[in-house]
Image (cartoon, each protein chain N blue to C red):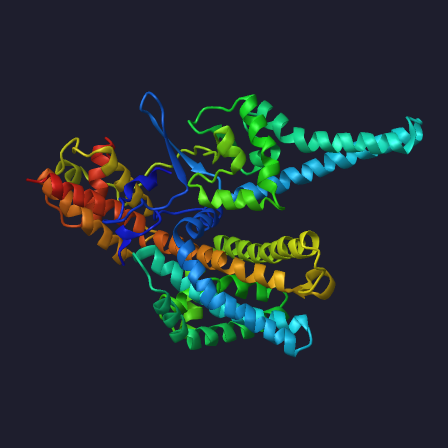
Length: 263
Length: 262
């Protein structure tokens, strides 16, 4: 996600380039980046929840039907009335219940790795959840969430009306996988490492960029790999007062030295 | 290519993220241009379909065939528009349509060969499925990389190489978007005319006759989003293949370094 930060606004452009991430800054000036959930993922989550709701309503309807006929509870009028009550409760209560009890998730959202959060990045309360789900009816109008989709398209954070009123946002949860260690082939020799300073002065942005490049070495065309390395290698060589013969190799060695690894 | 001036952040993305971005791109960046293009391209396409409906006495299969044929040109226009919008400040409507028209013979040639291969593939059970996915980026190969019909199909297959899963998701999601456009058009516009205005069914009915003007509107209205999403998937492939995101980072570091150097 943090890859997005690198791209600067085009010169003379009125707006920054579009992305599907939101940056949130806490009062302690700590910045979080969330991937926003757009209509595609949210629609999939909705369909899963719709299927679950359908199954719940059918099962409860069958139970009511059986109780009506089998045990003689008030006849057909009772079962129809009770069924409508159940359908109403499931329609309005399903999302409020799940999202309140399961930290902004429903089974559909969980399966698509989505979660409802407050716009500031902290967890939602019951009132926020109730409010955003109460306004589902407005988003649904005139049918099939047409208003919600339209509003989502126009909002930079993909919020529907309910989200706007409740101050919530739906984000994609990052599973937080740990990347495998970087392997430089062939392994650096002692002479190669000795030609570089023990801890080259590289910023976190430099290290992130080098890490991104070195992890893609081998997947890029060799000529393109060389071309990319030639953009940045002279900059570092000049900054650190070093010389090199092969730019991609130089970048790999520089990176290893900067993070304190020798292989 | 002015990568620094791109209107979206160039980085590797998942297919679902690409569709979300396409949705946002259409609404936030492309809407004014797409509306003008819709008036110049999609409305005449609809009118032509209406004419075909009139002369065939309401034979909907023929009308749908005509619509699918016209959709090829409409998609080419929106593909060019999306590509120009991504890197240029103010792309002209006429230059976009002109470029699409100039590349139309090559595109039709490529689509014709694609259709023949699809038919042959259909004989070998799931062969058509592979042909369908392999040629996902045929529009981009013809229109943006200026390839001839056969070279475009080869190039489209090369673009999908090692990314079959992502291309399959792109193809499937595009088909779902078009299907949703058709159904939404029928439900929204048909519901408005029949349910709210109480005018009956003057423009056909998708479920009863196999087609309607509303479904056609929904079909053509979905094409800009489909073309944009496929183009952004193509850009994602190029970003991964050519390391555009790495280039942008390196260029930003080099520029910052130049500024600080006395």
